[in-house]
Amino acid sequence: MWWIYALLSAFFASLTAIFAKLGVANVNSNVATAVRTVVVLFLIWTLVFIRGETKLINQLTRENWFYLIISGLATGLSWLFYFKALQLGKVSLVAPIDKLSVALTLVFAVVFLGESLTIKSAIGAIMILGGTVLLIGK
Image (cartoon, rainbow, N blue to C red; front, top):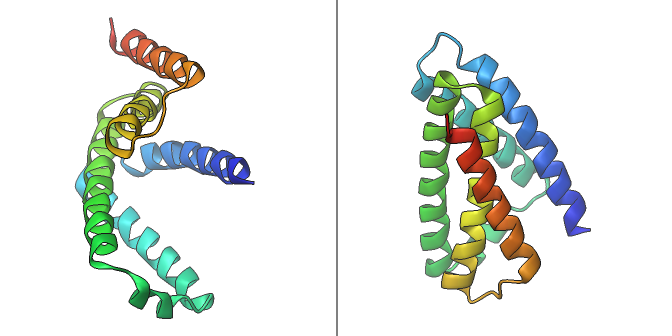
């Protein structure tokens, strides 16, 4: 079942790139990112309230808070750079290069989480890296 959610994530991420490219046309990329963030904030908190999940906030530990906060900071920085890249570049180049994050995540998962790196995932990461180099190169 997890892979269905992953495919849905990929589908909506692709729409994000297209709509964001249209949304940053002739506007400041930081303002565009701020608007997007408010929409995401509203959407997620609406879902949490509708599902009655606000009471679960009390279950978060200090460690949860710490990692969620720095994850949020990383997300914010990612979005700011992504929107600036979309504003300056072609979405057909920016979006695939952004997916270098997949290869980096594989490396970070091995280094920081102790996950094992399979031959299949290593080859995939190398192919992503190669594709990124091809897209960036002139």
